[in-house]
Length: 131
Image 1 (tube, rainbow, N blue to C red):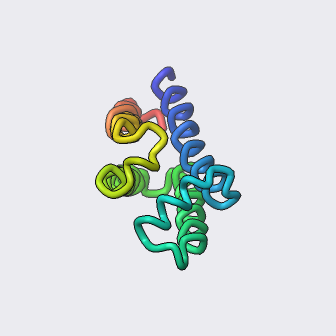
Image 2 (image 1 turned 45 degrees about the horizontal axis):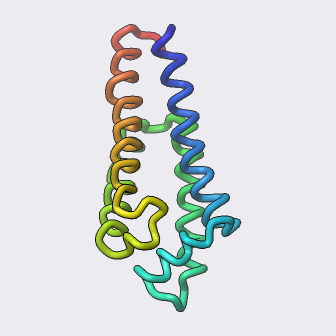
């Protein structure tokens, strides 16, 4: 039962990260630095539109996470997206990142949580037939 509760809490926290980044930081533009990053990487002309699209995709990711539909594919997608996004930012716009190049450590930690939640806790639960 402890593993199931841990997985539920971790799933909720992971979904919350995507929701806050998508809705608050990008769609509502509470953190303008996100749009500046998009502007620098993809160009200023359509930065707001791209930022809104990215934010919307992050909100959709939140719903996908909470649905638990194809959770392994979801976890792999999250890992690839976070690794790719952070690699690009690390190389192209480290000066705009909240913690500069140290952001990559937080990205690695987030990736580790996603991996642990899906491929360790979920495997443990499936082995116990407690899903």
